[in-house]
Image 1: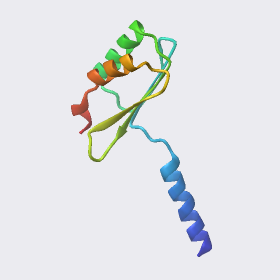
Image 2: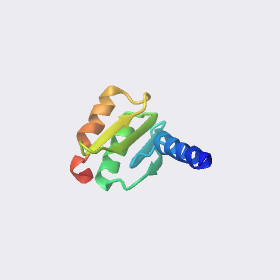
Image 3: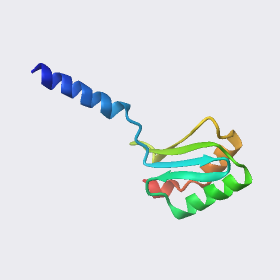
Length: 96
């Protein structure tokens, strides 16, 4: 019985602690480094164009939410003006 409880606590902790975004885009010194997930082509193209004009270092993560279509999370290396430009081009209708 103790093993079952210990295993379930570990499984619950791992389930909560793991970062699981549906989309991950990483930029470094003005170039696209890493992508993960099913990213709409127009959004990826627009993000690379923004990155060419204002080189950024950081990541953009998109999380699925129950009550809102999607939640955008930016790393601290991305300027607030660039964050707003990315929010403006994000296709919210694709993630309902």
